[in-house]
Length: 255
Image (tube, rainbow, N blue to C red):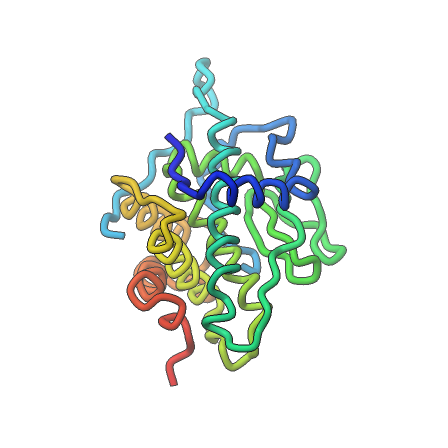
């Protein structure tokens, strides 16, 4: 069941605004299932349980996993709409005199056809906000893997985290934490819970556990989400909770 509860007119407007750049959300081919044990995290960036995510299917198994690709694409499109709607409604409230701008593109990709960020090829099995191009990109196979093994809430976490880096790109240096990855986690918590308060996002049973598991897994398991840049699992969970409890204001640097 889809969780987004945007009014029909607003949802239609958002979908139209994305149609020129997000047609790829219909699904790229080939769509290779991820069988590695790495998770996602921001390249530039991208809650109460600590259970390990279900391991990926054994590649030697004859049975193909039953993956609802259409549902994954729809959840991703919904996550983009929800996060964009939150920041569009509230950015100027938090940053007086500043004008919010959305990313210019949302780009899923596959490992054998890697896109570029600022002229440099991105890496496979990743999700990132590209500062030079003002785009959010993700490996579609990785997003599929996270959805199947981590739950649909992880899709929203990944998009909200990378969007946090997009917000950082619009801020003065004084408003950015030294630990930029943790601030992006904080912005993710602020945006998701803020969108829930606005009535445009609906939390479901198990979401907090899915997000906690994902933050724990991503802090521990991937080569680009090491402790030096992203913090350890408790750091990531604490940062997300700072946004949950304090909203965007809770994501400002501490004086």
